[in-house]
Image (cartoon, rainbow, N blue to C red; front, side, top):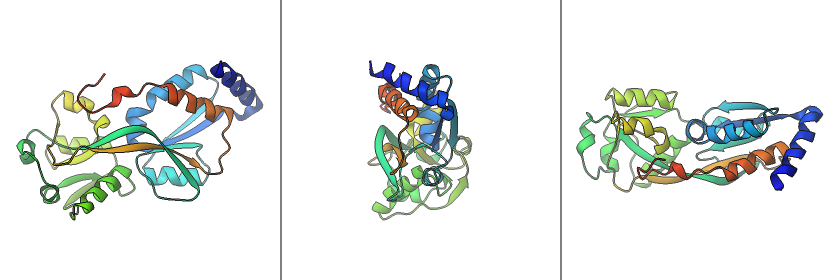
Length: 232
């Protein structure tokens, strides 16, 4: 079948000494969506050397432009003629807080209320932050006071300590929501649906290795990643 032919092509390619795949992801797909796909790829093609970089969307895109990565996965993008994007996974951005936070028992929280509340945020290169800020500005509101941190894990720690609220992909919160360490805030017109994009250079030649990875990506069941509470 097609996979067998792909396998032969990959083997021919890797024996020619070009057996590597360089993937960059922003934090959401990197931590919560792609590990399964990478695991499946590695099982099929253990001889291929994987380089895996996790950074914010802006830097992943820059590495694609510089050709230091083959493929990237990002949650939003800057328009650039050198890049091609295709939606590959669905995601939802939600607001959350500690159960002890004053907003936690409010209903239909408004964007203005969010703006008046201390927010724990990732750095400016984060696509989730760009996405959320543009949603706020559509409502004529800006983020108010913020504490800026480097990683989603740190965001969750500070929110758990009741310092402020935050927002991120629902996929990053599964464990904390289950353990009731964090709760979703009831914000009007949220959750916000978005796409996770596959990004590559417009002039990129797709080697058999890249094509094999994309084939596995296409066939991996990601339906367990919906945020209606029905985690698989």
